[in-house]
Image 1 (cartoon, rainbow, N blue to C red):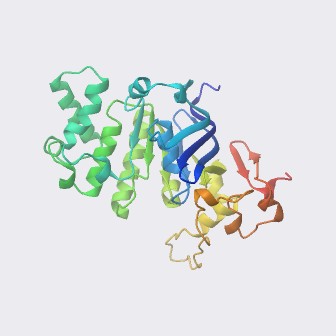
Image 2 (cartoon, helix red, strand yellow; image 1 turned 60 degrees about the horizontal axis):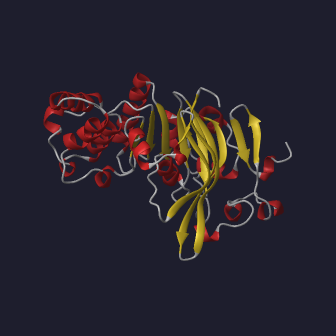
Length: 326
């Protein structure tokens, strides 16, 4: 395994037990994240982005979820084979996570300072005074106003942007090597969203963090990613460096996502397009290409055979029958 690869998912299959039998929300998921790299995982709601993030940390509830096959390699160690105690020694210390909705992710009955301090006292041997100083410094690093006062605040006393800053401080409390950010700008106004993105970029560069950023917003992707993974119905359908993706999207799904983005420029008079239909339910994913019912360029082979990955260039590939003869 390449020593520059920090995180590697190889053929990951995740199942969920239901009254209808075993359903597969994640199928044959494979990608690598290099040390210091910022990777965006992009797709509509229901594509499996959050399940992917939670599976890396071993936070999927079992049952009903279970890993059926594949590997999740972190720094040359397979996380799937780890026991609960081993995983707890990595969560928070070496892998941090910013959860999707800070108002529900933060505990309403504990102060912000106490919640940040919990991770520090769990993983680091510091005195009470040192923990307090560490919490204040973390809040200062995420640009929380009046950190000495805010650490005594409860989540409901903070705005959405300040709660998100507290979540970032909590995720970075023990200086992790790898940070997962699950839609950290969702439900924030555009000004606060820009501030959070700037803050994440700044902290990533300062700490040399490896980042997996989950979003459905391609406008956000352009500001933070080195590499982009386009996800649909539990599988990666396209991978590309961010500039190449915006310059020339290949998969029809990626093209549909691009065409639905409002750029907001005065000279932009194009009509926004939408992708017809929605992501298929787990019990109704069609055989062949999962995107077939929504694809404007569907062919007969798409309804019969699942497309395989086709290498287009270095670090760029697409899973689509349109490119299968290359």
